[in-house]
Amino acid sequence: MAAPLKTPLLAPASHCKPPERPVINEEQQAKYDWLLEKAKGWTEVPSTQGKGGPLTDREKQWLTRECLLRYLRAVKWKKEDAEKRILETLTWRREYGVDELTADHISPENETGKQIIIGYDKQGRPCQYLNPGRQNTEVSPRQVQHLVFMVERVIELMPPQQETLALLINFKSGKSRTNTAPGIGQGKEVLNILQTHYPERLGKALIINVPFLVWGFFKLITPFIDPLTREKLKFNEDMTQYVPKEQLWKEFMGELDFDYDHSVYWPALMKLCEERRIERTKRWEEGGKHIGELEDFLGGLAPHGVQLPAIKEIDKERASTSDTEIDPQELIQKLESVKVTDEKPAVFDAPPPTSPLPESHAAA
Image (cartoon, rainbow, N blue to C red; front, side, top):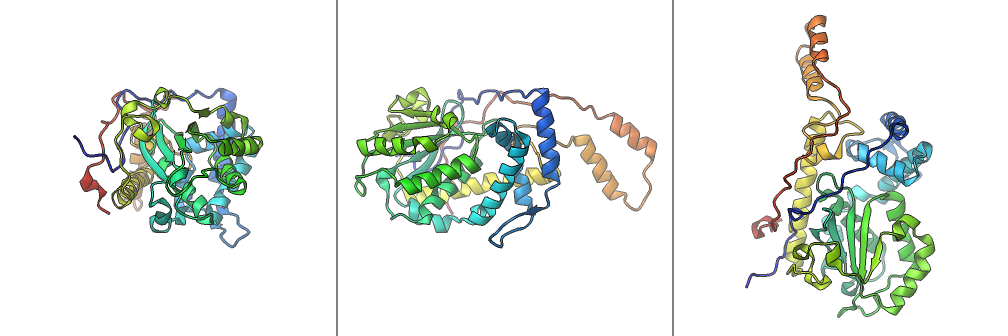
């Protein structure tokens, strides 16, 4: 009998693919173009907590084409509202310290496996499991930081063409906690963060073993949940409708034999996320460090980003011949050879193989 898996899965099952992204119309494209030009003009991140300053490379990389579109969709294509929301999120990320949250700081919160990222649903969304019955700490700001930290890791593990996550919550009581309902104050804080600063990121929320007290909690917070978000909540349904059974954890009625061992899982997850983060940053830098870059390019699917390869070669040649004159006719010929189309980035049908992370990969 095979030993239980203790590390993250690397990719969705071969038959699980994200749906095609909706095509935006001319009016929506014009609003996106307006927002992109605004974003390119941002130089400072405002703050009332002394954390303002120039826009960093990491923040510019965060401002992808899909990021801007997510905010536009969230505000029903009201471009000025989208600009305001994005700037507010940039400020919040600075002041909350999203990029400063470390694995060591968050580690004590996850020692019992109360949050786990493992497997993918049938649309290629990474699955983030919440297990309130494994609660091991008292209410504190770090509990909310824990959720934010894990959402950031889920985003790093999203495969190309997928920009949403699947949230699986099991309210079954555990050894350390019988009342698994979060406090109203903390619940409202989490909802505000997710709805305000992670718009269009929730693909599906699958919730099981909901006790009476938790039903009461949901009734109390329902007025604060966006109507579109409420439609994504599924209670006590057969989760194999949404997640392939071979990638659905046994505790959620799947067939994935996974055993949480913090000393193995935590360093393995951090290593995997760091590798993905480094790869994306490298592609962003090689692509020209553009605001509005394509997430499929950063994820390694699209062969090029928003700057076409021929333009890059011209830029390189310019840099290497900065002290000499460039033949204008030769430059015109090269520019004419660049065919600009409205085609989408190339999509490869064959998904990456599905395989668990080797135990050797778990080394810190």
